[in-house]
View 1 (cartoon, one colour):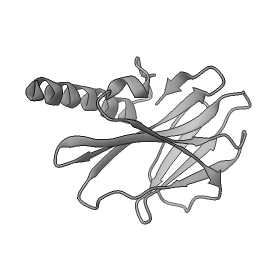
View 2: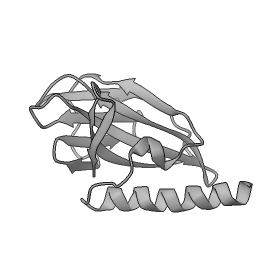
View 3: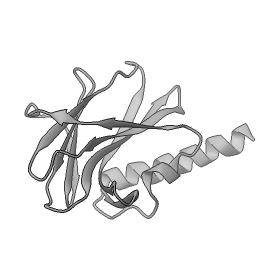
Length: 142
């Protein structure tokens, strides 16, 4: 059982990382990708990101990670009722350790930040998503 779960996690992480590196929409919601770890939701507070940090985007959302301080920066780029989300997965010692999202419900054109803490020896992957909180539906992800 452990071997099949690890194989599932490896395949799912390859799919997720592929979504980070390409602009094609994801076929599964982020919460469906790794069902064995609880999803951590955080609500972004208003702020302005520093320059030069890595970012990914999709129509309606930009997500960036600031390694110094473990901060997620999220910008909503569409005037709709949906929120921008930095969707992330965290691996430690080769296994999924945590997963979650930083949701920006501040409105179109606004940046938000979520402050997290990750182990220095862990690995992160992330994508930008649009989430309709009123319906509980993932609209699209990078």
